[in-house]
Length: 485
Image (cartoon, rainbow, N blue to C red):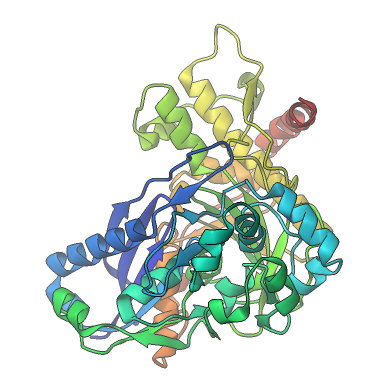
């Protein structure tokens, strides 16, 4: 038996899975992570917290099934994208990492647009808060001594790779999203790097997502009962790895991920740089493909938030209460899910969330359903933006923790007017994609036949589409009011 280990370093936690040659998940383990927000718009994590969570999951897998760990042939990595981890000469973090949903670098985005007029045509995206390049420019202005002391600038999963192997490398898919790379050529762009206060010698070499990026340290192999010297492949950012996990491997295929954020991802053979509306284009983890993205910064994070502020009840229980007896969208408040600003299609880190239309009759169930509707409407905005760029969206898969809710799936399907399929592996997501990339690196199939099986399909509901269409105008008006405040 040959197995492959996929590790996904997410924002709210780390997930590790063991996958066989037929795409069956044989075991999995999770460990939580917390986000620090020391100032408004800031979002940070300690890099060592990523590593400690990875160790916890692999310790758990070794305890669960030592024989399965001994059968692992290769390790694949996935991770939250755009993070900036600054390391010293010894590979130790100099400060907390700046995350993908950090919004402090708004002014630096404008500066990069002025300095590099063709920025989006080079990188595939306009500079936006949260992306690596603007955050590095912010550091060069506000923490110059710390940036100057940094020997390496790494993405989250690549910091984990360093701990696993001692090697410093990134993959083209994750690296292309930093906005430090010429996306078409797949190489670092020196003028942009220079404007961010760096030079390319402090950035990791770039390899393919299914290329070998190091080999596991012997001490760690012994700890977890893994074979000595097994390869750790390049892997990908969580959006691209999630696409591989969802089977998105050809032009026109798309997926929506309902995780901490909401991601709308479309694969394309053509490089279509995103010039506006908060979209971005990067390299896919599959050679020869690009990926157009729209991102809603708060998806399941919004549900976790409303659960906490209304009494801390389990999120799954709240969603189940809605699904058991859903209300008409005409009966629920309007919710704008801009708890951390918004990327697509507004590109505005200062947008804030709000409810409108509440009365004494409004209950917690009304609020939870309106959060689900607000996220669905926000993903509808991503859908419209992506279509405006010229992409063709032929089929849409739904993955991530939110895919457990068929009602949420139907809300989204009704907003975007597309049927949605949830793969059997929908909840595993990027960790499965990382394991598949590891399998491909060893000569196996990227996607096995079993990996194409579907758990359920959801069609648009005309009644919901009409009600959500009526709600959309109030939703848009509320967003415009928030922009003027």
